[in-house]
Image (cartoon, rainbow over all chains, first blue to last red; front, side, top):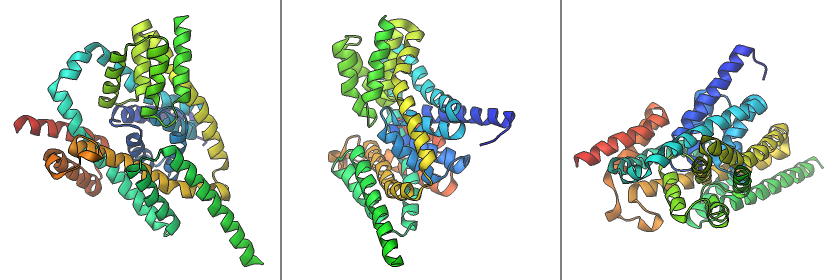
Length: 195
Length: 187
């Protein structure tokens, strides 16, 4: 991406500010930040497309380390190489570091405070709403491909993870195999129609 | 010297915690609690609780906590750095490979089969959080009498607001937190 100095600086600042705010709002684990990142970087800023976001999620899930950190490294790299990755990972790491440094001092007060525990419980309803909104849109797009294979993959993967507790790694690995098989069958199909 | 040890310990935590979140717990426990005695089990349990209550992962939280206690802000920085460095190196390599080859037909076909599964993973995480929000427990606690009405109403309201009016999701998260707390204070 070729940009002049000023807009480059602006983009890096936006990258830092966005990852910082998203990281500070990520209550409830790795896939929450993926939902927020999709809203911010796909819908709002239009830096990447939706498929890219899903690919980044798959890579982030398959790499060691927390998903938010991994996803921001890949996104940062995409936006501005090594510098972008550094900026994004700094933005994502700072909020938990700051929060823990503060909470470590006031831990007892924090744990026993009634209002905080109520707020944290009800906030989950909002987090769930955000994820469902994102999942809704993503599902529409999977259905729009009109490929039975993709819809089947989605449904079976959901049943496997949610009801049967199959790990995400196994799901991703299985889908890579399915994808490779799909590709090989396509080539074979094309050759047959040609010959 | 202790800082170098800490760095190596958290580097290992970062390197071997594939799958994120709870995958790191046994690893941190063996590296930090059992082997080096840098943290008591009770402190570690508290950290898991904090990690559930705050943004941020258990690995980063533990790194910051242990680092701060042993060597102040510098310790926190070194432990956190050690924890992130493996992710950083591996993700950079994977990102490089991904952006180099992602337009190839073969890679596209494989990624297309992978994307619906990622949607399912996100949906599954969403279901778990929804159940936690509405029933304050896991799948086994789902029943009509366990339903928390305030959270159920907030969830539906939040969902509608997001879909109809495209409100900023962060506003919805903190909004439900504030409105819900006020409601519980009143009733």
